[in-house]
Image (cartoon, rainbow over all chains, first blue to last red; front, side):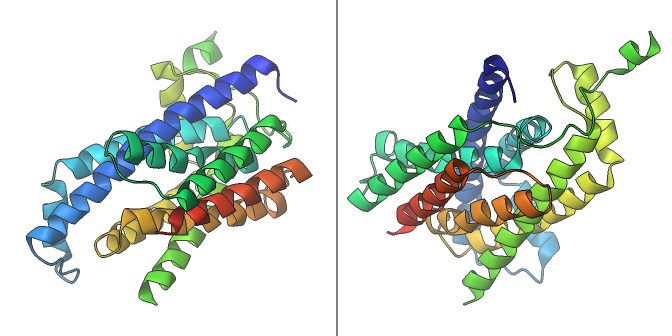
Length: 149
Length: 122
């Protein structure tokens, strides 16, 4: 059982991870679409495809944001249940719909808003449960200088 | 059909990556600070952990499949369609990682899955 402050810290880390993943996915989507709009992608010529991917700025930036997401995701997994972290991360869908509505002025259907409500209730249910039910295999990571002492 | 097959591969690869990563991170130890020295220690331990390396392989498979499918399908369709990972991943957490999934957590996970499915309806 974790203390309240540890739970808050895990939720805060997940919050930053969610925003990073949302930005990363949007950038990746934009990049891949812009590539296939210029000319059709021929996957057998994968070297040319790779060069076009690297040459499209939004793709490396998108990958960068996904790396930030990954570091935060791995960090929380070292301290909390996968079955706690995984549904909590789904808040990203809510962030995507909200962004589409507020920033891109897209019309969001009633069905989608219902989905957003269900996800939010689901995330609240999961987040209210204890973040950790697994046994500790290994305690906190100790950096080299502390080991030397 | 090919889109459905690709999404199934993406979901299974994603869930396998999550389970392996969790197993690896628990062997490495709790990450409690973002000090560069601690992150470096964690990164070096991660790079020599077989579970983390297996996770990266599955993650690469997931990302490659995701990029390929995005070149013809919309993110607004592909991303919600991969929602099954919440249920598959939770099953992996229960049966492989030995986590205790309370009734509240199962209910929450199911609501999340259903909600993501609803968001997917155009």
